[in-house]
Length: 486
Image (cartoon, rainbow, N blue to C red; front, side):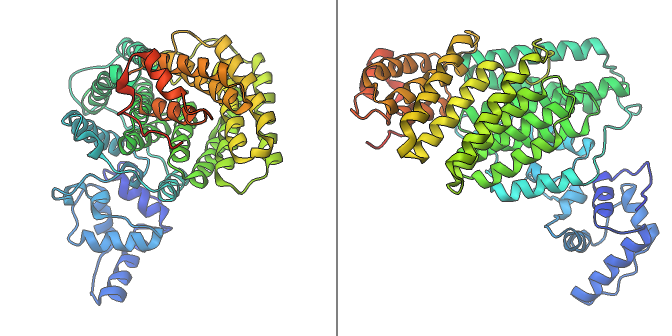
């Protein structure tokens, strides 16, 4: 179906094309037929009426048109998705319900960010609910197969002009926020990152820029949304985390900048990690497969990213409980081979304003975690698997950047866990106490504390929790976590 190039309602354009209509006349006839068959209505829509809708005109029966499109797409299409002014005070649609249309993404993200900034600690968890994994993956897969509408020219916008220098400044601030989050955790940097994201989105919505600059800034928006999503996930705010990550995925797919595809892969991996942590490994596996399919073949860090994805897939497959030990170990071995081959790739740090690529320390830590998951699933092979996890955790700690505190704590936890499984209880308790001491320096990380308590629960003596808390001197660790069952 050919729609006008200057269509104002680009969401409707995507829905009409994806519904399989061959022309605007065909779309009008299909809506008329739907109204007659389902409701006995005698409608007379024609191609001129559809054209007016596409040019921003209102609709006298938005509910019926939305239901006709829902029938064609095989999924619910609410009227407010097509005509936002029909929302009438209803709650904002979740991000995954929207197609990849840059203008709509920016409008919806701006609204979501402002809602976030009005929340306090008690209301922030209710900002957004967690979407079921199958529904989320179905929607993302659907929109990935549909048309993506890029950022339009900005000639009609305000007098403020955004140049390359301004975008570079935004990128450098983004890099500092990423570094602060890696060192100190989400509590220190989340509010600042949300404010920075609001500024970047407002520029795209109100300022003027050339095509290259606008798409570069949109790629930074994708990075910032993904980073805020990671911060929310780290803080246990799963609903907001999912929303920010999905908005980031949309912006990454809509940007023509060279960093967009890499950001898409990283965000899909983030969403897969979250679903795995929420005990939805089957949905996580589908997102991992989608991430593999969209990874550019010639990316500078392609082998590292693939190694990360294979380790993540091994963990998700183990969680399904339906895969054999040999298959999962084969995936871990493939990830190790890719990690070794990646040494020939560029070792330069990622450009400012982009998501960090997996480092060797990250890959060793994730391999350790994959072996620990296997050890829990296959107790008979636990000693051998735990030994391999120990080796990988030691390597991760040996080469990790000391400023990346949270990553180092995860590696320390993995090391203690592996040694508990090996029966080296005395050394494992020393490692566990060190992990708790380090955790106290990374405030408000719900994910880190949950992982810590999982590890402490693996102490067969049941003594590490109390001893480690005494060493840390910070009993605030206790109420922020669910105590492990012994």
